Length: 187
Image (cartoon, rainbow, N blue to C red; front, side, top):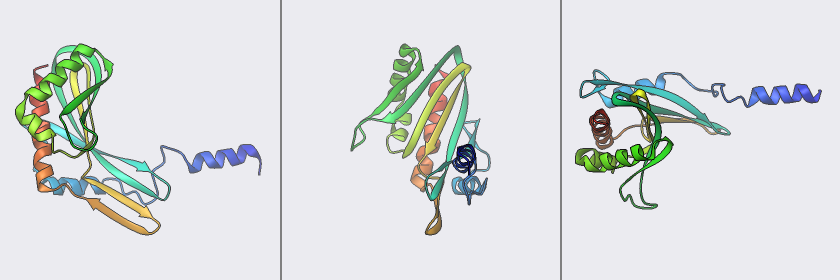
């Protein structure tokens, strides 16, 4: 076998855009929708969507879900921010990290997240993996990846496990989305 052929076969084997073995598109989304128990995917009259994505590892993959909320912005600009809990072991506040855009906007976003008491009280116990907030022109886009509402699929030994949202986390999640809609509408 030539080096070029071997390289091509390895590329095909480890391609990033290839769906992992055993991936069932939409199954995790449907379980999460039942877990949420909502008739419509909306918060305070603003619709949100849920998208799923996979992350492959050696003999397993994880199907993660992301809550996407789009909110009209008052002023047109661009920016990309990540929100995370402060503190290494215990949670001590909320931190906003600017990825791109105006640093003053990052400081304003940080101040608003902390100032809105209902949002702050919902964010602190929320078990999220990623929370990204992006501003593109006249629209904010929130992408929240919760640790629940995902599925772990292992090939050796073979098992599947759906990680459900607890009722408390469901409540914090919906309150967080409502709070982010409220805060971002004013920025």
